[in-house]
Length: 98
Image (cartoon, rainbow, N blue to C red; front, top):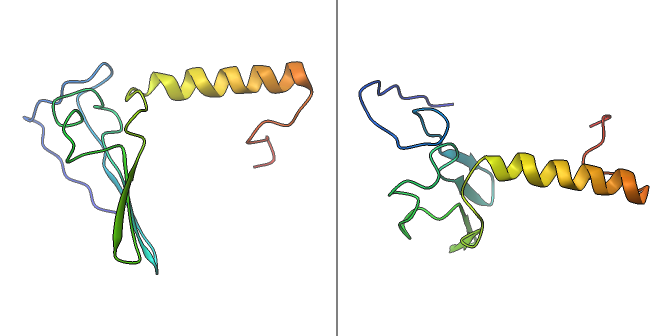
C-alpha cells in the first residue's frame, strides 16, 4: 500500500479534503479505481481519469463513465437494494455471513 500526505493540497469534495486512487495488480492485468472521495472535481470530469480502468491482455478498457461520481450513491443504492431484497424475500448481494 502506498500513501501520500499532502496537507496543503486542496481537493474539492462534498465530504472531506482528500482523494483515493486504488490500484489492483494481478497476474493478468491491473485495475484502477479513480476519484473515490473527491469525485466531481475537475480531475474526475476529465477523460484521463474515468471511474474504472482495466488493463488486461494488452488492452485498456474503461468502465463507469455513465455512473454518478459521488460516494452517497453507494449508500443510497445499497440501501434500496437491501430494502427490495427484504420486500421480495430474496437474498441481498452481500449477506451478513460475507
